[in-house]
Length: 242
Image (cartoon, rainbow, N blue to C red):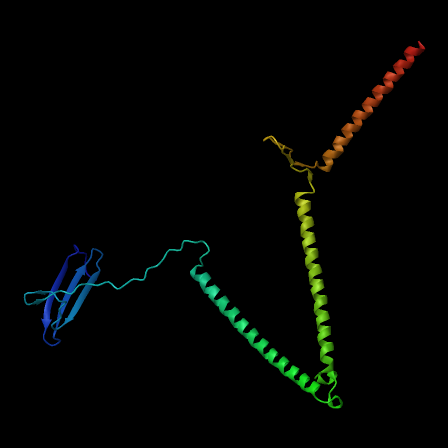
């Protein structure tokens, strides 16, 4: 580190007899106090094909080729982390598929051998043939597999029943939240030959307390009308008697 400077630089060039090579050194300091040294060493007799008197021409700087990077233009493209996860997932799937293929080939080999034994048994004389049941290695194995299959079917039915009931409960909750309190849905009517349309308003049901108050008002109005009718009838009787 050195003190701030005005950004000056110094370049020296010389020939070292011991190393038999040309050296070019450049030192640079910056306002922040940084100090840089750059050195280029050239072998004896180096030339790039251009001569200027007896001095070897200064070599030209050549940039290394930079691989062109294309922009990602589609939203479906994977990010670096997604591509890594996708690669790991594909490798796991490929390994699982290869394992399944190996197991299928092994089972197919066993089946082929079993069929060959059955065919060989069929080619023998009838008195030397073995009954089909003799080829079962474990007679209880079939019963055990059938029991396991039935148990899996029973468990699957229970799981499906639980899932079905779960969906039904969710549907009932949605209906109760969005539809049960709706008195009238929004209805749109459009004519065939005109461009106008008529729509209804989506109205919610009135609360029970408000319905009770409305029923009381209707009952009061009905009682008042009844009283008016009875009063008018009494007046008519009195006039007829008078």
